Every structure is written in C-alpha cells, then in structure tokens.
Image (cartoon, rainbow, N blue to C red; front, side):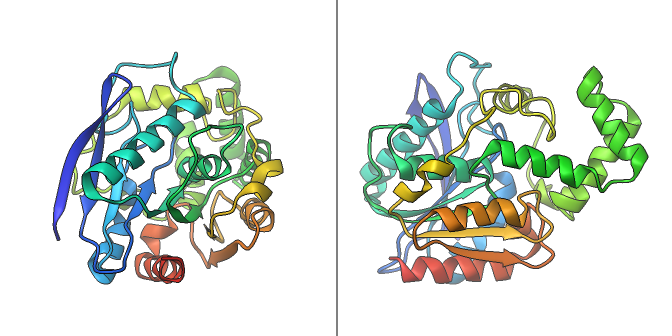
Length: 304
C-alpha cells in the first residue's frame, strides 16, 4: 500500500502523521485518534485493514508529546483544549494538502473522548466540526467517575493478593514491586489486551516514551485506578445530546470500557449505534481485526 508520512507544525513543535492507502472514488478518509493520554498511533495500526480491504485511506497522527511527535514535557499546555486545537490543526492540514475537507473520525479510548468533545463544540472549543461525516467512539468513557468506579470493580475480581498489591501501590506509589507488576499484567491481560506484545506492534521500534508517560500521569494519574490529573471528574454526559454526527460506539465484552460505560454513550447520542464484540478487550480492534474492520467499514459506507 501507499504510505505517506510527514509533520504538521503545531504550537511551535511538529505533529507526526501517517497516511496509509488511498481513497477510491466516493470514499472518504478515516482519521484515527489514539488513546492514552500519552500513547501513540502504533497500537491502532490493525486498522490498516480498512485501507487494505476497502480502498479507504486511513490517517493516523501522534498527539504532541507522544510517539513520533517529540517534545519536552509540556504541563503548561497539556489539556483538553490543547489536544482539541491540535485535532483541528490536523484536519485543516488534511483539507489543505490532500483536499480532505470531509472525513470520518475514529477515536479509541482517550481518542474517543477527544472525538466526542470535538463533535460537541461549545464549551470545549469554538471552531466547529464541519465536514465530519461520522464518528466512531471506540472503548471510550463519557464520564471519568464511572470509568474509575468500573476499573475498581474489575480490579476487585482479581485474586486477593493481586488486588491488595495494586491497592497498596496506589497508596505508597511503588509500582515497581514484582507483585505489583504481576497484578497489573493480569489486569491488562483480562481487560486491556489478550496479546500485549502484539498490541505494542513489535515489528516497529517503540522505545520507552518518558514524556508520553508524563503526559499520562499529568492527565490521568499514576495508574488505571486513580484519576488525580487534569481529567479528574471529566464528563460529557450532559452534552451528548448535542452531538449531531452519525455515531458508532464499539467496545469489547471483556473491555475495561465495560458495557455500562459504552451504553451510557450509546444512549446519550441521538441515533447512535452500539456494537459489542464478544470476548473483546480494550484492544478488540487488533484481537478481532477482520470483524472489527468490517463493522466499522459498513458504518462508514452508510455515512459517506
């Protein structure tokens, strides 16, 4: 497939982007927004299948301070408004340089939170969302308090020693103890990815990203089970009814985005459709690549 890579100037730095494939006649590109906050686009590359099988360009970008979009720590900038401005900048660049003033968007986890805020508009931003043909919200919360309470509930099903190790780490801040790492690995295996090494795309060089980690700690907190950062008590539940973009909600049955979290979004957005993938975790787009790609592509075709 054709692959193009480049950088988009933003906030005095450079936002990395990657375009996979090309759009056949009548098809709009799919812009993919990664999670974290602080992750990168690598783990979403199973979505390349949409370009491979369906003749639709798939566009990824690494949010500033993440992946290939290297910066020093930016605690004075990190926040919802900053990353929404970057999303708008990416869209403007794609319109100017590729002619893609209309496109679909898929946001996974934190990326879905960004997509919802982008589709809502005020009070999150004032630059509009014209040309957004559809939105897929993949394994994302609309309310961080519910997300946290569900994570704690899922943690409670771990063996007692594992549960207590994770609880103690959130008290004393020592996440390097072997028992804590083992407990976290079991939680991730159950709810984040059945195949952690595959989720990290080992065919690519993915060195440790300390600035991305700092971004996560600043926005979320020190673990899955505390939300002490900028996203503490974040919610768009009362604004979901404002969204006028055709929306697909996706999640896995074993996902840390539990059915009650996904259902809150599906119920709140007018006309939204929800696809629950049996046995899927937070990385269901990789675990069930063919099925996930077919479901998303079918939705995109209905909303060109």
